[in-house]
Amino acid sequence: MTADEFRAALARLAAGVVLVTAHDPEDGPRGEDVGMTATAFLSVSLDPPLVMVSVRDGSRMDDLLERQELWGVSVLSESQRHIAGRFAMKGRISDRLLFEDIPYERGKETDAPLVRGALSVLECRTEQRVAAGDHTLVIGRVLRADTPSTESGPLTYFRGR
Image 1 (cartoon, rainbow, N blue to C red):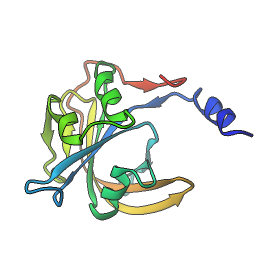
Image 2: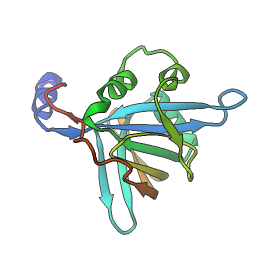
Image 3: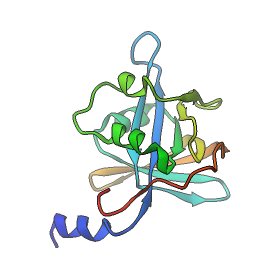
């Protein structure tokens, strides 16, 4: 099996799209916010409440979550496709500029930016990191969950779009 065959087969599995965010207090005098679009995100356990996100090894988010245990997740609605695209770009501009015109509020538990209008938001603390090929599976305990918006359907990723 080739990498292209594997990618094509999994492209037929629809996935929800989330924005994973964290605040890096060590980056500059006021810190900096970091964000990453993810489709490899899922519920792991109800008791305790655990979720998992897969992050590419060596990415900015992987480096940050290795030393910052608090992070947030915004489950994006279909009307927030532009946010997903912005944070998924390769060779992108600085995270500070990416957040510039996106309405968000700071998580009470994590200080992570949580997108306003998201279908749901979660605040998490890393419980475990598991090496998995060229990615790291970050398992987080959900500290707080909220469902601020139900007016739209979910943003999904299917066949590369």
